[in-house]
Length: 368
View 1 (tube, rainbow, N blue to C red):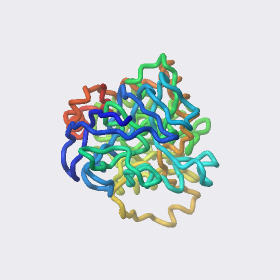
View 2 (cartoon, rainbow, N blue to C red):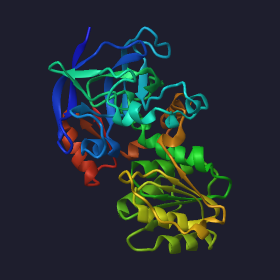
View 3 (cartoon, rainbow, N blue to C red):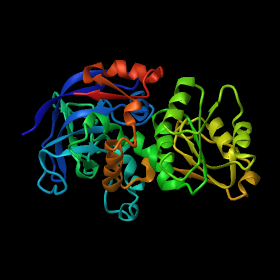
View 4 (tube, rainbow, N blue to C red):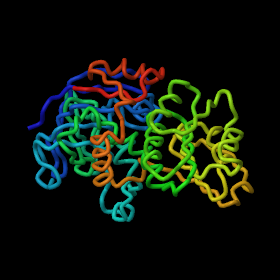
C-alpha cells in the first residue's frame, strides 16, 4: 500500500524547502522502503533547488541519506528489513562502466541521478494530491522521513555505528576520499594539495593523511578552516587571500611542484592556478563543478611535462566496498567526520541551508 510521509519539497527554482505530506509509491521489485535517521545537506542539493539544473520541480531532493530498511521489493537480495544502510548514488548495473567497477560513470548516470526525477521506466516514486513530484534523486530523495530507494543506492553498514555520523559518506566524503585514494594514489613522499577546505576538501585532507604522502597542503581563505585542516592531517596551509598559490607551493616543495592537486572550489581561476602548481607528471583532479558550459584556459606547453587533468564524479567509487570501508574507519576514529558535522532537526532544514551558505557549518546533517 502507498504510504504518506513528510518531506521537504522545493516548489520551484529558487524557492525555499517546504515541509509537506507526500505519498510514496509501493516499492518496485528493485527498491526498498527506508526510514531515514539522518541525511546530509550538500551543495548539489542547493544547486538543483536554485533551478540551476533541469530537475523537475516541485520535487524532493536529498542524496546523503542513512536509515533503516522497513520493506523491500520482490527482487531485492542485498538488504532486508531491519538492516542499517547508507544511501548513495544509483546506476544501471548493465553498462560497460558499471560492469568495470566504475558505476559513477554509468551510461545513464545523469537521468538516473541528477536530472530525471523518475525511475528508469519513467514512473514516479512520489506524488502529492494525486500529482507526480520530482523524485528518485540519486535513487533516493532522502529529504523525507521515509524514502523509496533504488537497490543500487543501498549500502548495508555496521549497525553499531550511529547513522548520524556516517550519512555524509553517500556523496561529499566519498568524493573527497576517492579523489585521493582512487585517482591520485599517492606514493611515498608525495605532495598533495587540496584547494578548498569545505566538506569535500577536508575529506581529501583526511584521506591523504592515511596514505604515504608526506606533504599535505590545504588552501583556503578562512583561517578557522585552515586550522581545522591542520588538526585533520594537513602538514601545511596556505591562506589564498594573502599568498599566491604558485609561489606558496614552490616554496613548500623546493620548486618541484605538487604531485597531486584536488580542486574542490568550482572556481576556474583557482583550477588554472592548481594546474600551474603541478610538478612534472603531476595530476589535478577536478571535483568542484561550476555552471554547465564553463570553460578554463590552460597553457598547453605547460602540460607537456606530463601533467594530467582528471574530472571526477563521486570519487569514482564502487560503493558496495568503498562505503563500508569508510564506515570502519569512522568507527575506529581514523576518519573523524564528526569534526565537520553540525546536526539539525529535519524541520530546521532552512536554517541548515543558511548556515552552510554562510560558512557557519561545514557539513549540515538533518536528523529525524
